[in-house]
Image 1 (tube, one colour):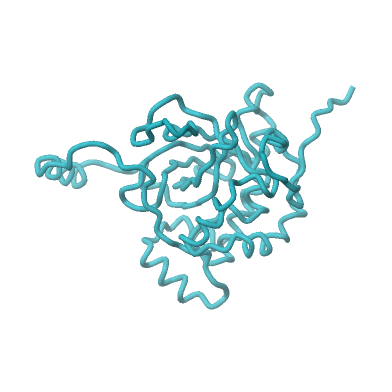
Image 2 (image 1 turned 90 degrees about the vertical axis):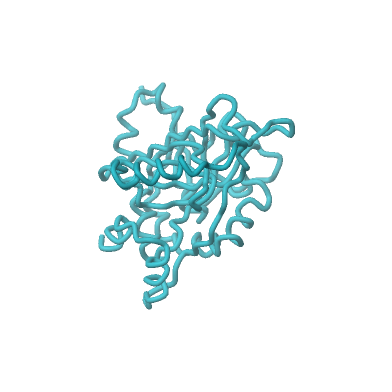
Length: 268
């Protein structure tokens, strides 16, 4: 569990990068910068606003956001419009062993935009939910076993242990920005209604180039992550929601080894 404690230490990127360089046991998962995806309209901050911010920073608490010390990056398709999908940067707090909460951003730089929220629960908590509630929660085994979900800049051993701790978990994700895929839509502001996001559970579901672009920009090797996580396949239980988006993509898709749909047949 030592690497989990390292994750929670929330080291600044420079220090974490140095630690990654120093770790001889394994490499690191990659950590490139990704800026915001939209330019927000508005006047530059005034000197007065800057002074007020400095005072607030010195005198007020930021305790809740200071706990967001686990960083994950993956991809989300919208459940009702799966062709609309994008990169999601998660900054998370592990509240306890069964519950994690994440603020979602469109990048990992200081000017990134808050564009959603995700709650992550264990299989044990999920199984106790009402059936009507379960339809809001997407499965995570596909994201993990495909190698698409990554904890940037961690030693590979730490990334692996973190992903193992999230096997069989579920996420409830609402995005509030750029939630509709339309050429006419203005994404410079968080317009429109929030949308429920889902997960990829078969190879071929992500838009061509989506994963590759992230990997090249951030120095991540999704295929290598996939290979290194094959020892997690025996830990995978069948999950609810795996087949929700099956057949809704205009491309050939294939099963991800270890990702299975939970039977909905009830015993009589």
